[in-house]
Length: 132
Image (cartoon, one colour):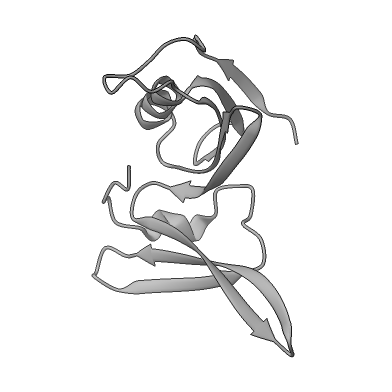
């Protein structure tokens, strides 16, 4: 899969209002319209860019600080992604629960082993609530 790459400004010495450094961030975005996109840069500028230009989308965000990374899946437009650990026959498996809040106040839940790396048509049924 070919990703479009967007590089935003990143200054490792830049600090926020509380005096903390911004982490280097990569968002792997899968928007409703357009190609999958990787957005790289400072955490605050990347989040603002994704919110302004790539919604609705599902994305995996990865924060890098001091050589260590952490990340998770998120989505916009009333789509929520949770991680469930389920024991099946004494084997612990990590499953993802995708909860979609529909326009008619119903909730649809999908239980998947891995998140599809594309926009699914079922996501279009989500209400317009923002999750940022």
